[in-house]
Amino acid sequence: MVLLFLQLFPLFSYPLSYFHFFVVFFLSFLSFPSFGFSCFGGLLQITAVKRTGCLPLSLSSIHLRLREQPNPVTMASEILKHVSVPTVDRPFGVHLWPLFDQAYEKVMGYPASEFNFTEGVTPLSTLKETTMMLITYYVVIFGGREVMKKLPAFKLNTLFMIHNFVLTTVSAILLVLFIEQLVPTLWRHGVFYTICDQEGGWTRPLIVLYYLNYINKYVEFIDTVFLVLKKKPLTFLHTYHHGATALLCYTQLIGVTAVQWVPITINLLVHVVMYWYYFQSARGVRIWWKKYITMLQILQFVIDVGFIYFASYTYFTSAYFPWLPNMGKCAGEEFAALAGIGIISSYLVLFISFYIATYNKTAKTGRPRRNTGQKSLIDMKNFEIPSPAGTQNGSAKSTGRSNGPVTRSRKA
Image 1 (tube, one colour):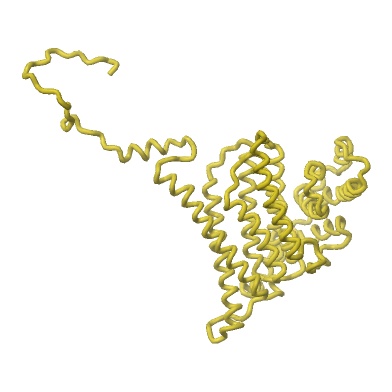
Image 2 (image 1 turned 90 degrees about the vertical axis):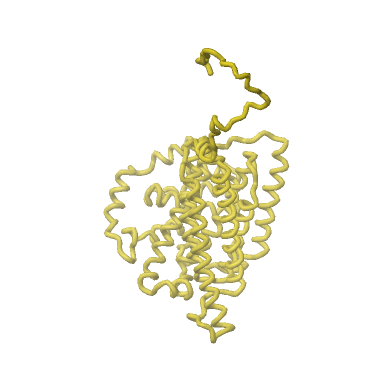
């Protein structure tokens, strides 16, 4: 199935190596490392085929390639032999970075440990490239919305499931790689060193992960493409959040900030939960905890704001107001600090507003999103039943005569 993605999603082929990163992740860690490594040769062949326009990939060749793979049970037993008790240096019991390093080298031709992020050399490392990507994103989604007004909505349920499952997997793998890099530093040197010192939060492995997370933000633009094709409404929060997050990741890479791992790792955790929710919803599974995803996002931005404000405060006070209490200068550029403050603060305000408008309004008006029975309970709670003794008969007057025997209808 993974091999089919290169055929189903041609958008990922610009630049082609970006999607290969995620194929490497998916195959190496989800389907066992040895299985993933044996597939990389095939992926490189597919790359050559796509570039030369020869010999399109067929289902039979995929099936043949998969049949050539070793027994997954055997591979799993081999891997488990190398899994030990979790330690500070290996929080998952196995050293994941060498596996990723080998996979990266098979795809890119050099190990991940030799990757350098150089402005103007590395793809999408300039403001011009980032701006063009953002302009393209907004032109495509808003232009596409106008085009779709004349067309019927597409179902795309299967592709939507695949998309969300892949992003769930990618987010989870990036998250565990981040955790493996950060736990030893946090344990030995503390939080301040990790968020403010370049040796703590700007190591070569972390730079690779920062860059891959940045590229992944462009892949997440496909979320909005699905909304357009399915003729779903495009909210300001959704479109602003996607574009601003890509810009934020760019500014932090260019600004060499050590604190960026905090919002990135929490965001990856949220995305694992969020994209898993969308995947399950596309499968038709009813999820009751959607509300708590928004609460988790708000908590994410509260934590982000705390760390970013602290790092920015100690940076600016040590540089311009040294007489004020501070803990020294944090690594990073001033424009990156200001971008982080502005964008993350706007997220917090927007998501709180969204939560109030969506959930608190529902509780006050008694209008649940679905047939939960809450409407009747809320409406009847405040409904006062009138007393028969206090009712009036309008203009009717008493005659003083008895009405005689009265038979009450059973249908009344």
